[in-house]
Each structure stands twice: as structure tokens, then as C-alpha cells.
Length: 76
Image (cartoon, rainbow, N blue to C red; front, top):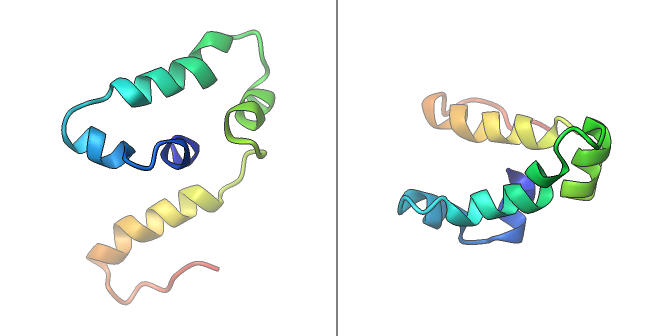
């Protein structure tokens, strides 16, 4: 998702407006068209330009839960 967001800076606005077409097109081009012909780690590297990493997921969780728990410490 982070790679798609970087490729399309207005992605969240599009999704908020109910327009999922840009995300679907990005997924088709970078993920779906490869099907099972590419190993997952290779596919992730091709789609995002970097290997699988927990950094983006941890950042997402921090953003989500820091709204609920204001004293939550930001991850390094």
C-alpha cells in the first residue's frame, strides 16, 4: 500500500471518494499480472523497489493506534 501511495499521492483522496480504480490499476500492473509466476519476495521487490520489511506496517499501526492511545511512543 505504501508503494502505491508513493506512486499516487492522491490515492487516499481517491479512496475516500469511493474511486478504487487507480489502486486497482496499480495492483493489476504491479501485482496481479504476475500471478503465481513470480516468487513472493521477488514480486514484493519488483512492486515496491525494496525487500519485504516491517517498517511500513509498524508505522501504519503506530498512526492508527496513536489516535486511540495519545501517549503511545513512536517506533524508531
